[in-house]
Length: 236
Image (cartoon, rainbow, N blue to C red; front, side):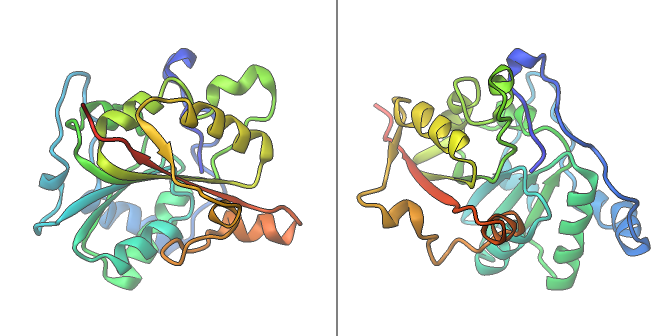
């Protein structure tokens, strides 16, 4: 996942925008498929109805912030064809990888913001998103970089505002310092409740939560991923 830093960092994005040169097919998909799926970065003060982004009616809209190579997002879209799935990812190579999956699986319920998620979060209506994912984000382990972590005091209010009552916020990481950070900030946030009732609730990935490549790399390296699920508390 490419990091999408906090507003205290002047709304700058940290991390790479582009990696290795893309293969011909992926370059072509950026030119041909992306324009049909792309969500323009909303201007300040704009409003975006997420249901209007999809050609067919959808019963719900989910959002993944920093989808990496897109395997989790594509799986969710394929398993939930009546849900519109939005992915925000500024890393061009990751966007191109997702486009390949969308084409291969003929997914018609995916939309892509190839940029920072925060302007879109600010443009979405209150209580308009049914589930949100922030999986294996850059841990930014140095203390002076803590404000670059997406889950924290600046972005949790954004997520709380756009999530429906009872909606899930799913987080995952193999970095224990980031896990502790996310737990600290999300548990104490008044709008979220941690669903865990025992160790298996954070040690075992649920059946409707497919593995990501980041998770597989972590396990291969001997690190144990942690899976966190929170629900948006009902509004007063």
